[in-house]
Every structure is written in C-alpha cells, then in structure tokens.
Length: 120
Image (tube, rainbow, N blue to C red):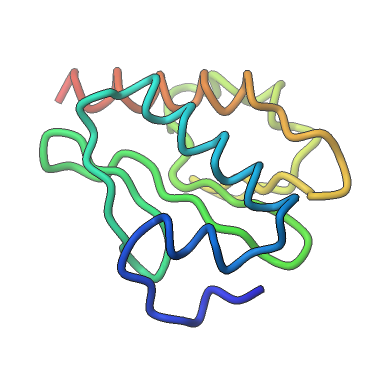
C-alpha cells in the first residue's frame, strides 16, 4: 500500500490497495457521489479528491492502518461528539482499519461539506 505513486484516476488509486481496503474506498467514493452527484473526481496531492463548483469538497486517502478524510467541516463543532473516538486534527479525521468504518458519519460529513460550499 502506498500513496507515493502518481495516480491518474481514483480507480487506479483504489486498485493499488488490498481487496478489503478497496471495498472501503469504493464505498466512501459512492457516499461522496450520493451527497454530491455533480462533484468532479480528480487526484490531488496524490489522493482521491472531489471538487464541487470548482471548490475542494473532500479528499480521502488510505494509509497502512487508517483511512483519512480532509477537510472535516469546521462549523461550530457539529461533529465533535461523533468524531471524539477517532484520531483527528483540525480539518482531518482518521478511521482505523481495524474497526468498523462509520459510513453513515462519512455521509453526514460529505453532506455538510456540500452545504458549506453551497453557502459560499
């Protein structure tokens, strides 16, 4: 597993990971598409990214022991309680691969990012 390779598409990125991680990445990708059907896929900073109306929507990346998402909405601690059990820093959240991935929370984060972009 590596994010150091230069990928041209999200499909290439996902295919570089073990099958179990590929499934997680595919599901995250679909969740983002569901929240933002008009978002454009790209690779940016060597990781999958989505842009909406020309603005950065969400990036996600697989690492050896976790999946990270960037950015997490910075609006008055909306997800503070839900994210408290995950390692996160300002604008970043990491979901350990040895625990169930909170896909519903990922969907809520994606929807909140769409709403932030729509407000701007």
